[in-house]
Length: 219
Image (cartoon, rainbow, N blue to C red):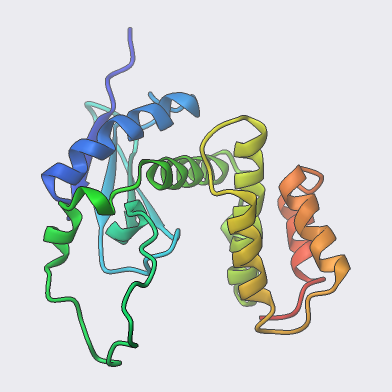
């Protein structure tokens, strides 16, 4: 019997934005060979941090389709192009945009296909790592969660790069690594060697990544 088709759902996204994202989501599921893994995949836009972060939830299937439903929650701006500051003067600290976010979403100039591809490939492969047991959240001490997540993100994007699939680029991951860990101490050459090993695939297992976390400045 052929597997049932995976339903694609969205919450909190405008119809125009969802129309742009659907074919990218279909391609990402196919590229990662998980097009038939879930009963449904739902992108839920919410007021969460607007970088590349996301939250995952799996809902169990039912008697008609025992496959689970994957819900990926994120800020809608993860699908936007970087918007460089163009103002001649600094905005007031409490100043907010006068345009509703839905209106900004429908502005085609805000949408980035490449960042949308990177986001979906990155997080779908991370979910796959969790489902296959390559990452076991319970084995990560709470005090190391933020650092571990940052390092595993490097592992995933390095893997995507080696498979010639869309993901966040090396320069962007280096920048995030630097911003995060330099707040806790001075980054030494040995720390950057760890970063490169994560990206190149020399460090791939959870226990190795945890060992790398313990060699970096403590967050």
